[in-house]
Length: 219
Image (tube, rainbow, N blue to C red; front, side, top):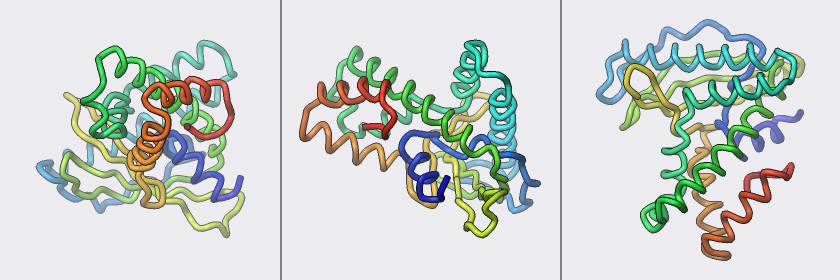
């Protein structure tokens, strides 16, 4: 898999996007900083949280492909990917124009697409090493930074994969993912805005439904 194909896969849907399933994790950087209203200790907890979730997902992916494994992955991804917020941020102003039924349908489709693509990306990058390189402040929480490098193609430059996270009770949720500094939310926002402008809301939903049975990008 080439670097460009890998990056395109992350941006297509997931968390994602997202570099979650690499061969092994390198030690965490000690460069943890206070983030927004969060303390350095809280930022470190966010980093530890996402690392733990990724390790669990990776372990499940190494099991035989069964319905039970698929169910486990759905549960695990839902524990750290904030699908509702990702959907709202991606729709931007369009969110307030839609009924509850319309939004429920949209979130359900987006979740299914992101989940599928995220799993594919992780399966394709099991032979990557990920190095956790600390955190930085953002307005709504913390950005946890990582760098992924191919084990077999060592001359390829690493891919940076960063996770925008906010507190959710005693845990954390990822609401955006940056691959080589490109935002997943902004990428979705551009796509959704274009389709809605050209084809309307029904056109967007129709496209998303079709993509659940297709192999190409989100819309």
